[in-house]
Amino acid sequence: MLTRRIIPCLDVKDNRVVKGVNFLNLRDAGDPAELGARYSDEGADELVFLDITATIRSRKTIVELVERVAENVFIPFTVGGGIRSVEQMDALLRSGAEKVSVNTAAVENPEILTEGAERFGSQCVVLAIDARRTKGQSGKWHVTVKAGTEPTDIDAVEWAARGEELGAGEILLTSMDADGTKAGYDNELNKAISDAVNIPVIASGGAGTLEHLYDAIVDGHADAVLMASITHFGNYSIRQIKQYLRGRGIPMNL
Amino acid sequence: MFAMNYRRVMECIRLSYLTDGALCCSMACMIVVIDYNVGNVKSVCNAFRYIGCEVALSREAGAIRDAWGLVLPGVAAFGYAVSALGSASELVKEAASAGKPLLGICVGFQMLFDQSSEYGVHNGLGLISGKVGAIPPGRVIPHMGWNQVELPGDMDLFAGMGDRRHFYFAHSYCASVSDETAKVAYADYGFELVASAQKGNVYGTQFHPEKSGKCGLEVLRNFYNICQKGHGH
Image 1 (cartoon, rainbow over the protein chains, first blue to last red):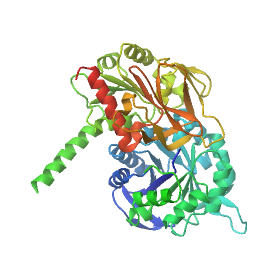
Image 2 (cartoon, rainbow over the protein chains, first blue to last red; image 1 turned 120 degrees about the vertical axis):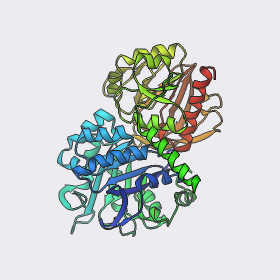
Image 3 (cartoon, rainbow over the protein chains, first blue to last red; image 1 turned 90 degrees about the horizontal axis):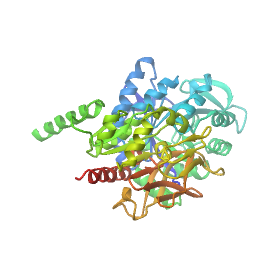
Image 4 (cartoon, rainbow over the protein chains, first blue to last red; image 1 turned 180 degrees about the vertical axis):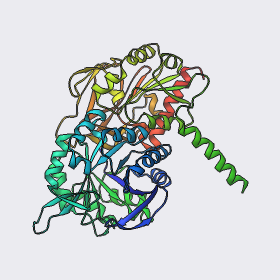
């Protein structure tokens, strides 16, 4: 049976891992390659590296970083942040990333999902959706771009379904409302999108307790859960997380 | 103090070796990973190096001929992979037919079979009888993540690894093996999914051993042992 995945996320800025509360007030949590290897040894199922600087200058840096990570990390990892072209995807995959995620580029140019899927296979192409609840409309979320700074009028659930049609092999779904709050995932959002697509959905944003992870899988129907602060700062080890979830009947690779 | 500095120096030497993909042995390289312009061949090389195996990335006839074992990696759509492999496919087929150990990974595994129906019908290498088709609908596709594989006791790739282990999968198409002489390992994805197959010296895994943590490295170590034995070591 396929297990549910536990995915620590490493936000990278200037070659260091940081984690912000609602993308502000960044704290330094260490070296990306070192943290990556630590998580790999601890039994994480996968890793996500998000380049939150994502400037032209940082593009070369992230490729070098991916190379360094890939030498010591033998679990899959996704790289995202500022990827604008299939050529950039190619460079990152060649450097050792298993998957690449796109957000803004896919909104501006949805074809990038199709081109990426045709060239690398859809399992390499992750559509990242940063969704925010639409004020005054219950059960509605809109897509935001540019690291959550710009709202669009695109419905998040419709966009997820379209992304699947276009070739995305997975959705990395972040609730911009829940992100950084440690008050739990937005499981209404997770469920709405998981039920609307047939590809795996990674729930992200809001993990604060072990129960939150359980809820995202059971109530939110998520195939995988992503977290940062609760593992980076040693609150819980990957093993503790997996033992807890397995104890509650969730299949785990433990 | 000395020990710490020494460790650092050794680490630097190891890293500089690892970061230079062009660095290769002067004698025949033990394992050649077939270089055919598809994504993420580097991870496979990294994993072999990590377990202490000499490895080179090449599609040259000489390197393929001299290798102790070959690895056909694969992160790409089947059709793209087959056309990118091009003339190297004959070299790989010849080497495998002559008894050289060959390990296909993911799409490289699928290419060992006769045919795939991914984005049109494409012919594979035909080293193991069988076809590659879409994972049956009614479940999450791609099959992505860690699934438990039941390990048959007689498959050399899984020697000493017990009855079942988790490995990392990421694929939308899967093989069905019609070759009755092939050994097959399965995972459960609501149907019996072919996770690995072996026919003589031809081995393959649908999962990614280079991305399956410690268990995956064990599989690669087993393949390395097979290559060494085949070479009389």
